[in-house]
Length: 458
Image (cartoon, rainbow, N blue to C red; front, top):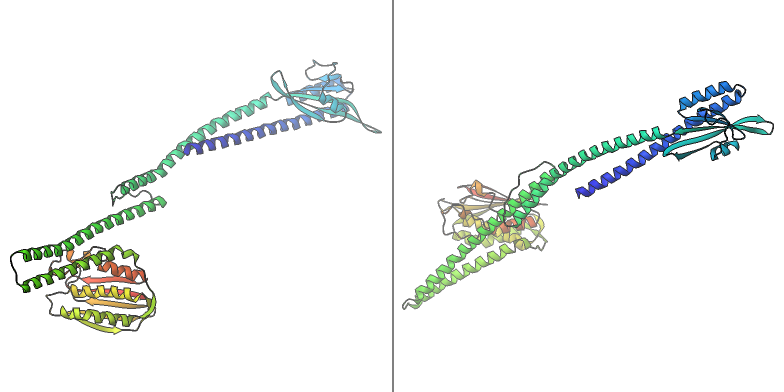
């Protein structure tokens, strides 16, 4: 592509140079023609005023011929040469188109190739006044070689070609350098894309420049990092689900093996079968969470105007027995009425996840575990807070809690081994909240508790 552009530039510049030089040559010839016409008219006036003094006329013609660097002839009305600046055509008859036109009272000029040389020839009439008008008594004919002018134009052309060739060479070199500099980051980016597509997720490019290319590289690095994070989360999620599924399957296998050994009482069979039933329910819940995770991005909303206070009350009623069973007290502080357009069932699902986590991740070493809920209405938004005094979250983990597959217990907090978590609840919460156009944030101190804040625009 660069070669094509260079050829186009060279051809355009060459054509422009030829046109300019041709115009320049035409202008030089025209200026020479004007100069010689002025000389011819002066000679005609001198001859008309001094016809009797042939010596003066010869002297003046030779002088003007040297000044004009041309040959000057004066011819009478019979086309006979009266004066010749070179003295070789005196008394000879000369006939050409210029002389014939001037004898008819017209000035005439033309260029000819004589002996391989370009010659400009022109003539003007020598007129005198008559009663009927003007009479023609002779002609001034001037011939001048254009070789010097053509040589000057040719020299200028050669100089222009040389300068153009050097300029074009330098321009082409600089263009190649600039193009190489511009395309180098693009080639690097193309190579990085190939590495990324071949599975090298997380590959980072060195930043090159601060313009649009630099921004593009920054976007690529950000995308590559996110893809790496998504892949890590996917692997972690699969590992977590595999581990969670393995536990009930192992328990079921052990229970079945125990039942198959010897004779057991009916009560034992019923007890073991009840345990198997609980494990299958647990597996069903795991599969349900897995399906929800797969469809996380496909959440669709059935939006209607609802009272958020009523939604909160319904969810608290549902979670209260579970909280009481786990010795967690629920306090509903200031609850302002807030009418908002939302998907009631999806909002309940999100709140249930948050309340469930607050109960699930209680601190067993504290005398009292509680969950405090409040919702305040302001001018532009409503603020819902869900605060507990549970085990809390480490500062390093706060940035990851909404990631699919992340569990607090996976982050070395193994103090409550009996807590079951599938690592996608908060991902579902965040997805539902953001689908509504709301915002969710979290504040937590490890060992003290966690507070979720939901901002609801009015």
